[in-house]
Length: 85
Image 1 (cartoon, rainbow, N blue to C red):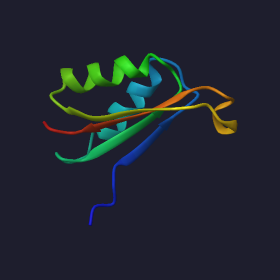
Image 2: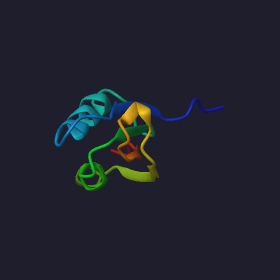
Image 3: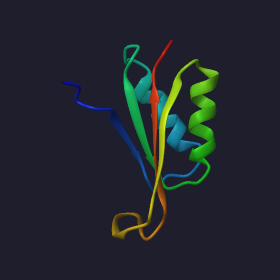
Image 4: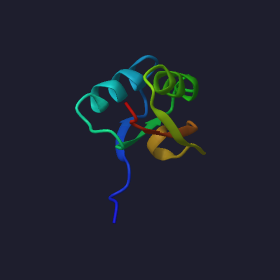
C-alpha cells in the first residue's frame, strides 16, 4: 500500500518560493515519487505545472480548496507532480 504523495507546504509563500521548495524537495527523490505542493499563491497554479513540464515530470492532480482559518481565509491549491526523469 502506498503512503501517498509527499507534501511540500508552501501556503503563505509567494512566487517563486513554492517552486523553489518543490525543486529542493524533488532533488534527491527517485522516479515515480509523487509530491503535492500546497500553495496559497495563485501563480503556483501556473508555475508548478510549468516546472514539471520543463523537467519532464507529470502533473497528476490540481485541487482548489476554499480559504480557512489556517490560510487566513485565502483560497489554496494542492498541486501534485509525479517525478518522471
